[in-house]
Image (cartoon, rainbow, N blue to C red; front, side):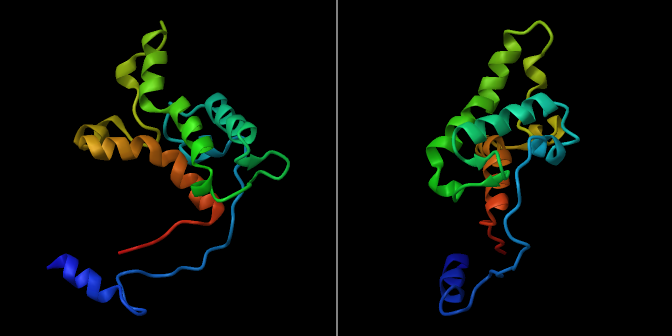
Length: 147
């Protein structure tokens, strides 16, 4: 019944959605991710700077203007390679090889250990990638709001 309702309502200027006008594209600075995830101790200035450098090197962000070059949805290979470098599995491997880090303290950026316990596998996978993907979509001004 819900799917029938959605199909009916999504036709000809109807639908459970709202088009919002935003302030436009936003820059990604070297400290961008540290500021966004300021309450997440995992996201240090060093990691934020490394992510920024990778975005610049991969041609996703223009280091002269700090603007996203192209729609991140069309830069999938570059974005995915950067995400994989900082994903949960990669960071847990680094923690396992370190004397100073505990792999059990590693969780998706922006997700508390408490919240992580309640996530299903699919939700955890989403949380592990959304920190980068959604930030780039917002910077490109290419995000959607749906109800």
